[in-house]
View 1 (cartoon, rainbow, N blue to C red):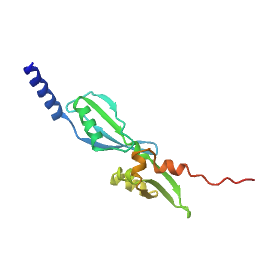
View 2: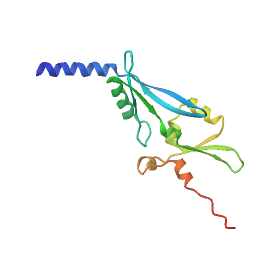
View 3: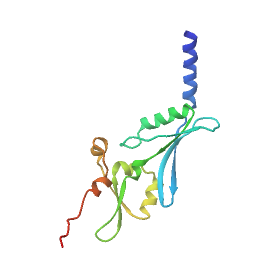
Length: 153
C-alpha cells in the first residue's frame, strides 16, 4: 500500500510538472472577434479538446488553475471569454460611436483589443462589480432594458 501511495504521488507530481500556462488568442469569424485562452498539454497530440466556460465574473486565477489542471491531464482546453463581448455599441447625441461596457469587461481586454475597438468607437466603462458577481447582468443588458417612451398616434 505504501508503495502504491508513493507511485501515485510521483505520478501526480509528474502531471503537475506538465501543466502549461495559458495563452491568449483572438478567434475571428467575419467581423466578430472573440478572445480565447488556451491551455495545452505537454508533448505531442492529438489531444482531446475541452471547451471551458468561465463564470459570470469573467476569467479569474482559479479558472486558469482549472484549465492548467485539465491540460496536465492531457486535454487541450479552449476557453472563450464570453464576458469580453458583453458590450453594446451606441451613438452619442452628436452621432459618434460609443462602446458601453463594465469596467470588468474593459479590464478583460488586452491592449491590442482595446486599440481595435478604439479605432471605431470611444469606450465608456463603469464599475458594476456587485451586479456582475451577485445577480448577474451587464451594462449591455441594463442598457437594453432602457426603452424610449411610446409615441401615441
